[in-house]
Image 1 (cartoon, helix red, strand yellow):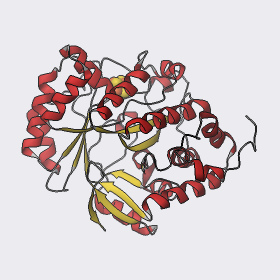
Image 2 (spheres, protein in one colour; image 1 turned 90 degrees about the vertical axis):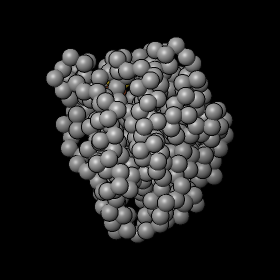
Image 3 (cartoon, helix red, strand yellow; image 1 turned 90 degrees about the horizontal axis):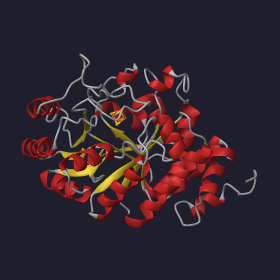
Length: 366
Ligand code: SF4
């Protein structure tokens, strides 16, 4: 592939179509400058959602930090013997939600933790039922594909059976965590188990076939190159064309603090603002209208970067944050983010803030 093989302008017309290839996405990464990418991506986004940018009143609940997978890029997990290992009882989960539910009008609960071998299917079913009974407005966005695969194996049932039971108990959507980067060599360096790329895509495909909507993610800024990123986006686009089950896509940059990758000297700093903007813009150009929502990863990059990304192809801010535990484990303090702050940040740059629910339906336009 050579520079000038493609005119950047043609990407406007082929965004998200069958004409989009891994090579073309890689071309965007390798040869097209950031302002051009941001301008093409913004034009596509404007066609999809105009000047509106959505956000959700979300609560993140990390119910356990005990995990037997032990990824090299994760500072959150504990083996279970450390003093700060924890697993919430169902009563404790309810107490946590109660603190925020009415006060902040929570409509989405992102619930995920480690792959904890001491928890069985009954825990999750009882947990989801209790949450739905006590907090009926909440849409449960629950469990990573790793947690889902492990719970199914432990219960000796298929992923499809498990998802059906979880759905009956109150699961609404499955979050896209754990996708990281699909390439097998990269995953090996990240310490993800062999085959976890097809496991992620397989669980998502089963969910989509059953009508359970999910989201998708990509973690960049570690040991990957432009081919790996292009391949990752292309695999997501290919699955999306089959069932249209992904509600949104979020690219987020790796936080190396306190991880094994940092200790081993493989990644010593996080990628900067230019990489954040490029990944937002390129994902919008790759997906076009096929994945209508591209979410800004403001959580690790701050409010100002959030404002820049919604001017570069993103049309969703993500959610409010109260007491999230995964990012602070890397040593980075993300604080809390209330909805009033998001609304003001969007109004300041001339965007129309739209509060949405877990299924991306409009709750209120501000
Ligand atoms: S990223 Fe998830 S699966 Fe991997 S060690 Fe951390 S909690 Fe466990």
